Length: 110
Image (cartoon, rainbow, N blue to C red; front, side):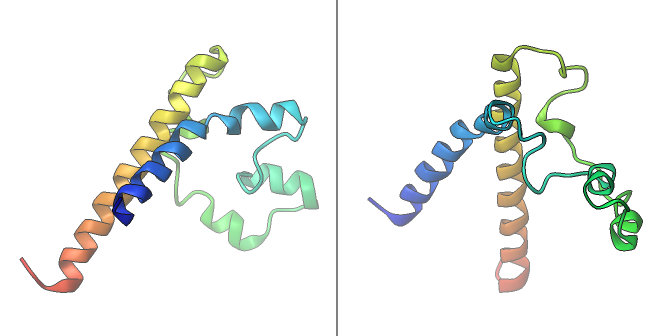
């Protein structure tokens, strides 16, 4: 089996497992997933919003905030799991397109 095939299979497994991000924090009463904190959550942890974070926090907003569609916040876990998987697929597609474009640009080949 080629290494690229193994890579895509592994990536597919991770996509299917992505809904664990919904289940595990709730199961362990951990709140948000580690590292996915907004400025207000950081303020709750340390008491203030670091200047750089405050300045850059309005620069980017996620295409699928909360890994779900608008108004899906109260949907059952099965629906949210579908949104998580779709979010993973969209993210992978965006990364692949960006890498392919950069590869073409940097290699100088047509």
